[in-house]
Length: 460
Image 1 (cartoon, rainbow, N blue to C red):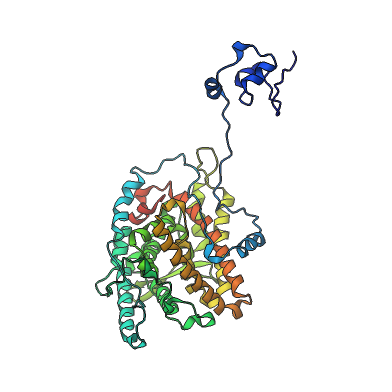
Image 2 (image 1 turned 135 degrees about the vertical axis):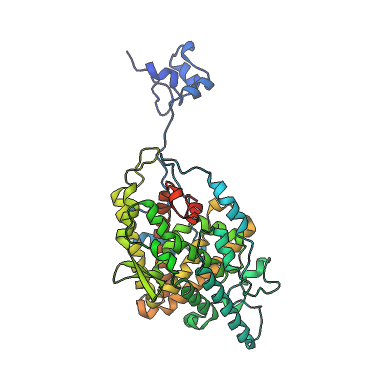
C-alpha cells in the first residue's frame, strides 16, 4: 500500500493506524490527500485519543553534576553583583513510594508557624541610631543579657518545638527598646554602626556580635544530651535524632543574630523551616575537627567537660546507606551508593573551602553564610512584597559583612577579597544540594522514632 502523506511541512504520516490520531494536521490538509470523511474525527476526539507525550523528569536546579566545572560557575558569579545572587528552587521533585507517617505536614506545623512570632529579642549590640559613644556601658549590659538568655536556653532539656525554642530565646532579661520593632526601617540600612569598615571590619561592633554568636553556639551540651550523641549510627532515624540537639541549638541562635533579630518572627520561622538542613550543614563547621575528620562537641559531665566524637564518614554512611533500596514513583532510586559517597565528599569539600578561604575567621564567616543562606529568595516562601524587600535588605547587609571578612583574610588566603566572596557563594550552591538530599531522606522518616523537633521539621 502506498504511504499517504499530508501537506503539513513536517510530513506527518496519516496512513493506516495513524489516520485516527493525526494531531499535527488540520482537517483541510487531510482532505487534500484524499482521506475519507468518515475516518476524520472531530477535534475533541482527536485531543482525547492523542497519544500522551511524556516529558523527562525535571531535576531540581540544585542537583549540581558531579563533574561540575567550577570555572563556569565562577564566571557566572562574576557577571552578577553579589547582592543580586538569588538561588530559587523547588525542594522536592517527586514523591516516594513509601508514604510518610500519619498526620499531614500542615497539622504538624500550624502551631509552630503561628507561635514563632510571639517573642521578640534585640541583638546584643542593638541601640538607637545616633546614640553617643558614652552608652557603651548600656551596650555591655545588653550583651550580658543576651549571653545569659542563650546560655539558659541551651541548658534546657526535654521535647520542644520550633516556636518553643524561639520563645526560650526571648528572655525577660533582654531589654526591648521602644520603637525598635514593627517598622520596615528597623534594618537601619543607613546606620553607620552596621556598615563594614574595609580592612578594619574586626574592630566594628557587628564583628563583636558575630563572635558572640560563635561563642553561644559552642556552649557545652548538658549531660542528658550525651547519650544521643553517639557515633554508632545504623539507620536514618538514628542519624536525624543525632542532628536534633544541634538543630535545637541553631534555632535558638538565629533569632539572636544581628539584623535577623529584627525580622518578624513568623517570617524568620518560614525561612528556618524551609532551609533547616542546609543551615545545619553550614554551621556544623563550628564543631568540625579537621585532624580527626569528625564532629567534636563538649558536654557537661560529673567531673567536668567531656568530648563526644562523631566521625563524619561513618555518620553519613550509617544514616543514608539504608535508603539505597528506596525508590521514587518513577522508579528512580532515592539514593545510590555514589550519592551517599558524594554527600560525604560535598560536605568535607565545604569544610576545606572554609579553611582555605577564611582560615582562623572561618567560624565567624560560617555565621555570616548561615544568614545569607537563610535569606535567599525562594518562590516556595510565598512572601509579600514588603517581606521580600525586608529580606533583600537583610541579605544585602550580610553580604557586605562577608565582604568585610574577606578583606581581613586576603593576606592569609592569598586571594583577593572579591574572589573569596565568590568562592564562598559558590560553596552555598553545594550546601543547597546537601539540603535537598537531607530533605529527601526526611520525607520517609518513621517520625515516631525521632525527637519531636525533628518530627516537626521532617519533609518541610
